[in-house]
Amino acid sequence: MHNPVPLDNEAVRRDDSFLQGVKECIPTLLGYLSIGIAVGVIAKTVGFSMMEIFLMSLLVYAGSAQFIIAGMIASGGSITAIILTVFIVNVRHVLLSAALSPYFKWMTPAKSVLIGSLITDETFGVAINKAAKQKQISERWMHGLNITAYLNWIAATLAGAWLGEWITEPERFGLDFALPAMFIGLLVLQLTSRKKIVKDLLVVGCTVLVLLAASYVVSGSIAVMIATIAAATVGMVIEKWK
Amino acid sequence: MEVKWNVLLAILGSSLVTFLPRVLPLLVFSRVNIPDWAMRWLNYVPVAVMSALVAQELFLSDDNLALRSNYLEIIASVPTILVALLTRSLLGTVIVGMITIMLLRLYM
Image (cartoon, rainbow over the protein chains, first blue to last red):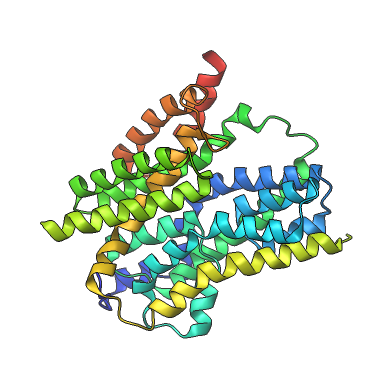
C-alpha cells in the first residue's frame, strides 16, 4: 500500500483515465449540488452579486467557508475575522492532503499544486477508496475527478443564486440529507475495502466519542479536526501493539 | 455584475487560507520519505475523518449535541448504511438516504 507499483495492463489503464475519474465523481455530485445550491441561495439573499458568488466558488471552493463569508459579510464582520474563521474551519484539509501524498510521489510541484488545490472531503473520499482498491491513483484520473467536482460546485452555487427566489424549503425534498448520506457511503466503502475491520471500528467509535466530547468545548469544525487526530493516533498505537 | 471591495478582499484572503492547507502537505510530503509510524497514522486518517464528518452531520446541530432534534436523520441513517453495505454504490446510498428522509418527514 505504501509503495505504489506501476501496473501495466489494458484494464488498469482504462480504469485510470481522465474519463473514468469523471465517471467516479458522478455519484458524489448530488451531495454537493444540494450544498452548492444552499450556498448560492444564502449568498444571494445577503446581497452578493452573481459575479461575487462566481468568484467565491472559483477561488475559495469550500462549502462551509463560503457560508461563513456570506454570513459574516452580512453581519458586518471584519475581513481579518472572516479570513481567520475560514482558516480554522478548513484547516482539516491538511490531513486530507497529507494522507493523499504517498500516492503522488512522482509529481512535479506544479502538478502537486493543481491536484492539491482541488481537494475536498468528497474527492478525497473517492480517491482514497480508489487507492485502497488499486494501491495507486493516476494523475489524469485524479484530474477527471477533481475538475468534475469543481465545475459541479461552481454550477451549483450559481444555480442556487438563481433559484433562490423559488426554492424556499430544500428540506422537503430531502436535499439536505444528500451530504450526510454521501459521507456515510464513503465511510462504508472505506471500511469494507480495508482488511482491518476490528481496528477500523475501534477508530470509528473513538472518533465519535472524541467528537461529541470536544463539541462541548470547541466549534464543530475544530471538533472534527481534534477527533480525527485523536482517533488516527489510537489506530496507529493499536497497530503498533499487535 | 459589481464586485464590492470588502467582498473581494474577504474572498482573496479566504482563498489563500484554504489553498495553503490543501497544497502544502502534498508538496512537502511527496518530496520527503515519511517514517513508518507516520504512514500508519495517515492510514487511519480517512476512516477517522469520514466518521467525524458523519457524526457531525448526524449528532450535532449548530455545534451542539442534538440527538433529539436530529432523530429523523439518525433513523434515516440506518437504511442508508444498509444500502451502502449491500450495494457498495455511492449513488444508490445517496438516493435511498434522500428518499428515506423525505418519507420520514412526510409521515412522522
